[in-house]
Length: 171
Image 1 (cartoon, rainbow, N blue to C red):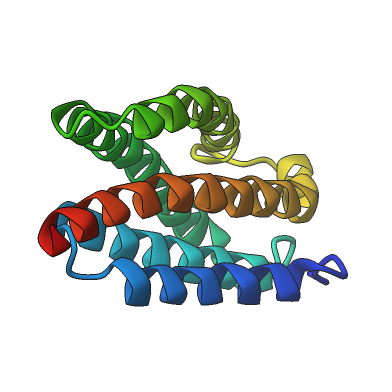
Image 2: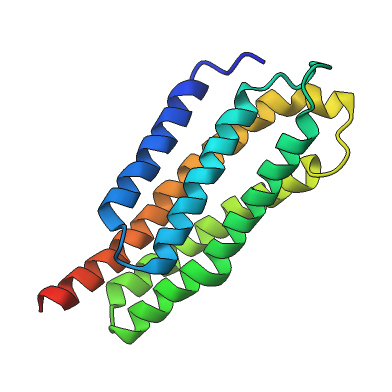
């Protein structure tokens, strides 16, 4: 598979962004640390999948694709059912109206991106046909864009939590 022209730079950007997030917010919150580690694993799997040759009979792609889909759904689920709820709860606990407003703005956008991740999973998680595999490179490019946008929005939420904790420790 040949990557789209921006594919390699997108992968590099996502990996660098994850590393930066881990460096900036690592240790502030154990749940966030664990989630950022899961993000890094997801990005590595995305890169591995992007570099594969979906129409090659030599490589068994199904295991790699199934693993990516599972990790994608785990990551999205953790975000929605643990991380975002925790961030909103802490914003309420600390009476952080700006944090609550940010969540009201970003979480619906993240919901839309999650729906697109679920659609990708539903398409590729089970028994891909030859025609589906032929479409995979383009679909991976699209899911890469979705993940990149998602990570940027999530980082804004994490940064807000980080600032709340930093201000409380300093105060």
